[in-house]
Amino acid sequence: MSQPQYNTYIGARYVPIHCGDWNINNKYEPLSIVYFQGDSYISKTFVPTGIDLTNEKYWAISSKYSAQIEAFRLELNDLEDKVNAMPKVFVTPEMYGAVGTGEDATLAFNELFLDNTVPTNMVLTGRYTLSGVTIPENITTIFAGGQITGTSTVTVNGYMTVLKTDRSPFELNTSISMGKQHNGRPEYFVIDSSDWTPAINKALQVFKHVILDRRIYEVASTIIMDKEGMVLEGDNVSYEQDIGTKIDALTNNLTVVRIGPPTVPPTFNDYPRDIVLKNLAVSRVPRFINGAVGVHIYCVLQAIVKNVESERHADGFKMTGAVYTKLYNCRAFAPTIGAEDNSRIATGFRIDNSVNIGAAGGNASVYIDHCSARFGGVVYENSCGYRADGGYGPADLYITNCEAIACDTGIYIDAKNNQYANGLMISNCVVDQFTYHAYDIRNLIRGMANLVNNYAAPAGLVSTRPDDAQVMFYLDHAKGCICTSNQMLGTVAAGTTRGFQIITCESITATNNMIKDCDYGYEMTDSYFCEISGLFIAVDPMIFPATLTRCTANKLQIFGSITAPVACNLTSSFQNSIDVTALNRTNITQLISIDSQDPPSNGYFNNNFITGYFKPSST
Image (cartoon, rainbow, N blue to C red; front, side):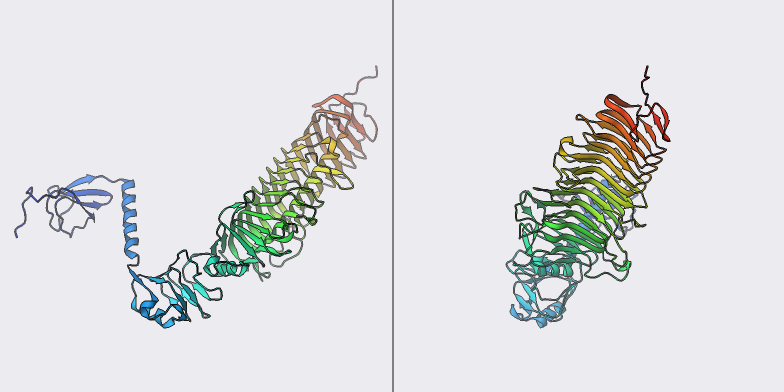
């Protein structure tokens, strides 16, 4: 047949043909569209081999390069490759002699694998006992009511899909090894259980990434996350409506979830890494007795706990040997309780450094952000929202954007004079309805502590302690702390409330703080080289806005409007600088008292320098 001439009638086809990337060695019909370097071309007539796209007799440019079109074309090509790679064949073990009622099907499975070397779907509907079978990579296993059992290891190198069924894909005692990363579920091993601990732990060991449904899982022992890359993920959490994923402990004194190994690793490099717990709640069935720990992070590197609630535990979240650990949007809480609940929650978030645990010796780089510790009902003595104490001390501890509600102490940090305790940041936190100390920092000798933009209010709750003291910021044997831009809202009628109580401290900087309606503003004892300034606002009379006892070389500036018999009281204190220039003295009987004496005027008195105090002339 002779070659058709140019511009000749070719039939009734009017729709162009898309021929993919241009190839100079191919022949093309008229109205063929090809792609080259992002541009598209359309043929005017029949194109023989060897004709370049620049030959305008054969080709016309259809569209110039477009990044969006090119990206779309590549996406289509990738999708086409994936579709072509999908298994086209569906087989069952029964086609190779398996019965599917629990008998040994090892031979049938192996014959199936030998007979299918291309991508293949293996559909399982029966129950199969296997011994040492390896499912090859080209086989996609579809569990459509099927189940694999056996005592020898079954290795799954291909993909697997589990359809909704009334039978678990594997028996709990089946040894499974996954060649590819899959998300697993405890329902892959049991459909329902009165104790989900074995199934959840089995799923974590086999799949590493385990997803829990929106339901209650009751457990009688600890869920263990001790391997690198493990993820335990629930489906939403809401303690108010009791919906989402909840893990309920059946017994008391139980750690519900432990992130970390069962024993201390020999070296820091042996710590498991990159473990994630998120989107679930841990609670307990015995409603009025507290358990041991909700979530314990133990000897682990880079753990993330996100959107997790811990309810009715002695320690809601506990960290021991946790390095570079982040807790975000987590909550430790208890609802209003009855008389039976006499043990009470002790601590919402505990950073435990009380025991030297070997390789690291304590916690380091712990970040607690947007978390909440809420205790309802009666506030029990020694209950605490966030607590770090003992041994190694808080090395790089960050508590930010958090709240503690209805507790004895909001945030308690005791570094135990350890040289490694440094890098403390508490910022943008709220402590409300406390009965003892809102923020308590003590025995910090390395310094590098910052308390910035925090809020505290006892909200009228009366302390049951013998000293009847409610202190917003309590600093004891601390060095190098910076406290700035904090707000303290006291309640004078509630008892002896203090804004700052500073005891045996050195180089404390407390500036730009607001203290409202407290009995005492700044109470300093045995401290030196501190710089203190703050705004006082008080409706009811204060006892002492500022009092210094046995203090040396401190700088104190007080300003605002208050009612008090004495604005600043110094006892056995020397070489301090006191500035009352900006203090409204209308409702103050005596501005300054030094060793029970009224200083004569501006200047030095008992080696203290006074600014802004002008004693009226006797004439």
